[in-house]
Image (cartoon, rainbow, N blue to C red; front, side, top):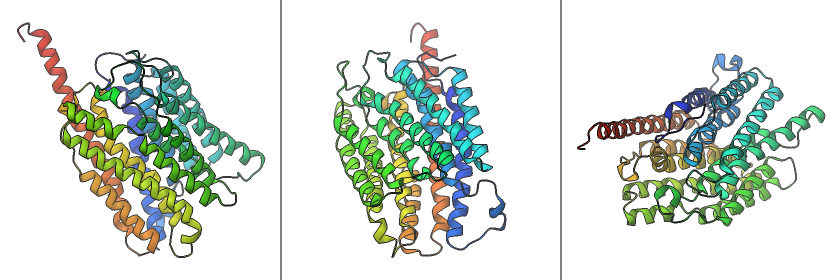
Amino acid sequence: MGASGSFYPLGVGRPIMLSGMVTLILGGFVGTLLMLKYQGIDIAFAENLPGAGFHWFLMIYGFLLSLISLEIFSLLSFEWSGRVAPTHYIALYLALFWGSVILWIYGEVTASLALVSINMALLAAYGSSVFLRPSRFGFRPTQYNILLVLTPVITLLVLLLWILQRVFMGSPIYEIGIASLVLPLGAILAVESRDIQLLTGQVGGKRPPYRVMIMAGYVLVVIGVIIYSAKIPHKDVIGGFLVIIGSLLAFKDLGLLSSLRSGVRGGLVPIYIARYSFVHIVTAFTWLLLGGVLFMLTPLLIETSSLPRDLAIHAMALGFIFNTIFGVDAVLMYSHAGISLRKVPRPSYIPYLLFNTSLILRAIYDLTGIQGVTVASAPLTGLGIVVFFLMHNIRLSRLRREMIAMRTGSAHNPDF
């Protein structure tokens, strides 16, 4: 049964979020073991640990897929249509999700990705039924809606093509771990491309403008990542160049920063929120651009650096994605939940500092090979993410309880 009402039903997405946190912890643990192994620190039981080589899968099709699914099935669905996905959708998604994780851990790669493919089809089917229709307030779909539905469709095609190549050719022509970055990168760009004025109360009509440049940026980034993953000549230079151009186009047409400034002048968004978002978004796109530059320079850096490709991938998969989550969710989650943006508490920069310090340490190791750096890098990454989600959810839950109590009290007090 779908949920509806004045407040976003927090409990609906909790099983998905819990699943994501479990895979985040497991994926982070596996990643830490891998980083220690890079530096010659062998842990005896790590070689026999199920899934020790599957860090990327646990992070992309575990944690990040959970975040994206949470938004499509519940958070953004409720915002756009006033309802969330029916229980049987979420139950089927969770069964496929955990089935794919278990199969992957035990080495059944093709079967695991087949289940992920079904989940992509599920997300695309539900998303098209919700986001390609007018919203509950009469807003028509824009590039935000199209790109949000297109992302699982593209990911589905990437997965199916890889599976078919593996089954019938034995050796796929691209690396699925890198190509799978199109899911989180595409989803982040899609959500960022929404008309932010819709959330900050700046829209006066029912025809929000299309953002053509961010659509072009989305296409270039996605194509660039896929080309970089392919086993073709000059893939590094071509893929990196497309990611760089796509990043610049997307950032230029983003609209978030200008709408936040407009909100500040109009009294809708506190100045400290605008500054907080500005810092995170600029940082996020800096990491995305760095990823594109490193893609292009991989053939040159491979002669002098330790792991330039590792840095390029994590600049995108961690730096861009999580800085965006930190900076945007700190503002928009309150609006989704029906809480005035003027009541958003002053956000903490502690998760930002922990997280980006960890990425800088990782960059130092990947470029120079200095031993010992990653001993601090991996734990700081996980700590920054966990601290952010804990602080964020505690504050959001408290504000919702206070607002519900106030409305309930006013309903029972005719003199209120």
